[in-house]
Length: 302
Length: 151
Ligand SMILES: [Zn+2]
Image 1: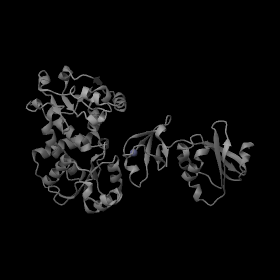
Image 2: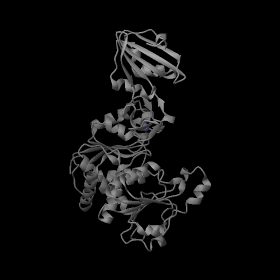
Image 3: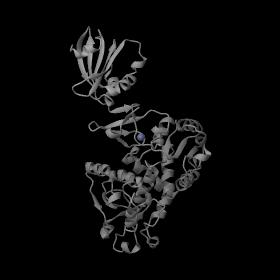
Image 4: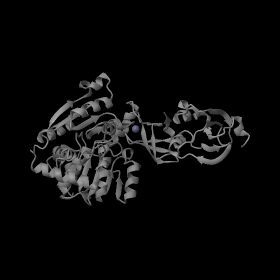
């Protein structure tokens, strides 16, 4: 993995994903390892994302690395009309690694072609956010003890949600069963179902959020966003249908864990938070260890 | 040689590219860089065709194209036919084929794609020949025939 950019989750093989997950566990057990004390990381946030940025910055600080960069494009040279090519060429001369968030799709792939140092995609518009996927994988591995043969339920906006698409692609290497729960207007796109058909992976689609979840090992919740609906009446109809309440968890499996990429709106009722099966806050913390693992392995330090 | 082909002067050695849609003649010239070469080129356009409404034809003297170069025109002239001419005789006929990698010819339909916002070369991989589907190497979205624009 040394010197390899991480732009899309499909850039990493099954073995590389497993290596990241194992390394993340190592960093969680021993978080203060100054492996990056001679490294400079460029943290380029062309659009603000406080959650992702703080997670990366914490990971860099724990590894003893130093950070240069900007937190939104108004404080960067882009606001003066500089091309992405020129910005990346400049900072790749200053640093050992680039972490980049950008509103345009495909910007991270382009940056990885232009840059002399590896690029980690921290989100390129609606396209990819592979470090989110790797932290989801680490959360699944940590709570289930394995990534293999799990029954994974994806709930909510399965049409536009890039996190569920990336998770589906990555988990498909570990023989899962998928259950999709969504309104008809936000169903899993055909291209992903065709992909699963080709790989011979079982999946089931449901319109209703019922006791079917009693079979789940992982319940991955997502936001159903108002702006996805052209018809506001349709949104009003579905917004309260895909809400998880504590009472729905009574007969679920002991090993079930509930994941959510955060921030949530109302799709997980706050009465779930105290349930030991709620895992979304720990999941966010796992992001720091997953990002430490990704950076250490790309820099060839582990 | 048919009468139709004589509507543009014959060449001794070189390549005749026939069955180009008349509307895409100048795109073909630019894709092949014919506007930058010094050898003799003759072309005819708005010629009647049985297969397509109006076609264009290009005759390039003393020039033979590598397959990978000529295949670049397949996106704008999918039915183009090549006649390789030596000493006024057709010695070989070829058709064009859409390449697996399409570099710098097509435009990504996605307005939020980096390729539409930065001065850079577009790159696609061929997903499907018919109906045409191209996957952008950058935003990973599919541009299909209905949305295809040639740069
Ligand atoms: Zn694109």
